[in-house]
Length: 634
Image (cartoon, rainbow, N blue to C red; front, top):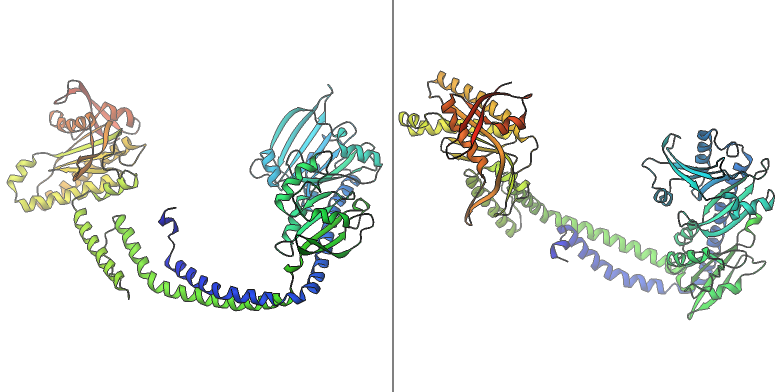
């Protein structure tokens, strides 16, 4: 990793050093205080383990009861059991409301004796990914309807929270028959009693689930079912762990492990739950499992036990899950090392942590104060450097600091700003800014690209220079160039070079501009008007006029940095530039102000601009003739 990847503000480094020093002092003291509290471990651990066991069992019952309540409610209602093709809005609303009652219900569905199937799911991450649900989906409803030809056709509806259908996906003929599913057969055999199937890994989402199903009392052959997410139980056991080394388990009535608090163990358990044997307890790399199994059996009661594993004493809390008869025999187990629990050590640890926290806060505040005093000037200098990099060379107050090196750096930056400001007078600043913005810092880079080029020239400038003092000519040209530069930049162009009294401007380089031809045409017309107004003011003031001719052409050119290694220039080279220059000179032959080529007329379009054809002419130095047009205001 490069060193700059570790760069952070000064306050971060100072805070880190101070916090590290404080932790280096406080942590040993905290450990000593914790070690002294081991005598009270047994009583504190017994109370906490019993409480946790009851809480986990109660929450397990709540998860199960949520699903059982949803199934019984749906079975008693007529909404899902009516004609599956009728009142889909009402069915979708009913499914959405039931699913919203508990986050543990993964799906609610109803199957009829004719094989029709209605299945509602919420917009969980697993279902959203499995179904590739469109954005804005709150819940989805699947329908499977039997056809007259004996096939069944499946379709998904994706709905918003207010029941509005976003899209529908027809899946066509499906082999899925709910009447062949274990939950359907078990519910039919139970004759109105709720049944459970699982746990198992759900085929669509890969989540660990348990199905609760019941036959509808008033609709023979109709079964309502709900899928419960048992993965939430694993998350619950992991989240509610009483210590870093605590483990939580759930065993079914046959003593088979169905839930483990360790995510890695749970990942290994899922494939085994999908197999027929499901002898899961002995196939996981958990040393406590062989010791837990003898504690289970018929009539398991709540209580705390001690077991030895790996030379360490563990506390084991067993809590049967009570409530519905379907939960009979299910046991929640929580195990944790005895050494993880101390009452006195917790008290001492809390006091030590409070003191440590206070010291750390004071240290961080001190570090921030010191860093602020030092870094304020550095931040200002960094801002100055960034402004210089952006060619913002406006004079700013000199940064001062109590640190001598910072003052030296501030003086160096001020000198650099002055030097660059002087140099910028001789370099097109806007061109440099656009070259940098376009990512063309390579001094030898050049590329072929479409550009639109404009050349201007002042008529009889040599005579004008002879008749007026050099100082007057320079002042007049400065005002003239300032006017042209402002208008060109306003139309997204750049002035590449001043050639005596001429201007060489370009569009679509260095930054791309898809409308560069039209921009150049608009700019040229505005330049002609502005120069006319400029000359009018000159006449009124008794100064000479600068009658200007314009040549405009577009085409391919090689654009980039050209020149020697010690002095380069950003420019464009090629026939396109030569043609633009020759067009400017042809104004003398045609007695015009603005001449363009056929390429400009085609690219700009006759709808937006007025082009007066002047025929073809041969440019100096070119064999082929050029179709010439005068550009006038539309």
